[in-house]
Image (cartoon, rainbow, N blue to C red; front, side, top):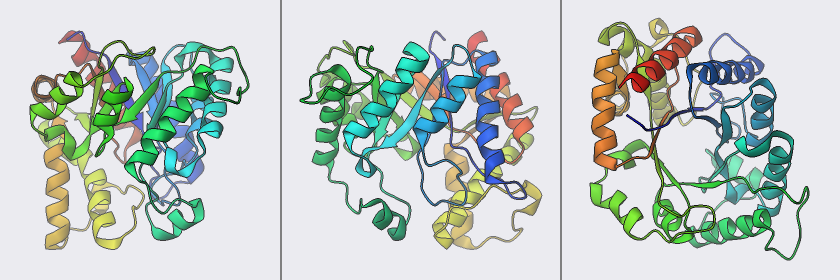
Length: 324
């Protein structure tokens, strides 16, 4: 398949290790992804979450850019309700000035995970129209059309991407920007994705629609081993839904043997959306998802407790994908 393959690493923390080690893990994964031939690696923004060590995408992008040579690096994404567009524009203009045209800027409108975080950020609501207006303002700064000229000036603006949750797909089409879709939205009717293409208005950055789909993709020698790799993230998701806190990843053998009925449901839901198995099993399911969505690019969002197994899975996925 002549479709780029990318990775999003959320800088997941792991039981028994420090938050600092999670940051270096993301950098190690970026180096591995670059060696394996991935198109881009993105990082995320979360605040006050025990299971995620990085809340500042721009700093994480800078660290990865310094440690790699050619892979594209970006945010998946910067949450605009938490920031003024001028500040985000300056950060990514500086990253582009320092590291050239391999910097991406993905933006979203998710709020903080808890009420306390939302209050601390001063972003307790996120109206869809405000999100669209913030994207417009951010683009004006980057393209030099705003009343204020941000510095460093005179750079080629980094490409903007819109995380397509809720109204995101519609806004991406209206603004002429690439869209990124993951989670339950991946299984929407094909008309949802076709509407993005049909309503797309070409822009200076993007003359044609471009859709990235993201999913947890894990490969192991057997389906059973891949299932075990997928369990730590599934348990973390279930724990967050039932305890209200997204925890560090734990080893599969430390996952409670008798989860509650609700936790079991959440685990099963997560595993059903995860694409894990042998190379052939993963590529077959992934190809069907690409056909369903008409995706132009695929991004793996997988995490697991065992980082060596994660890097090995990334490498095997890239090899199998390029071969397919």
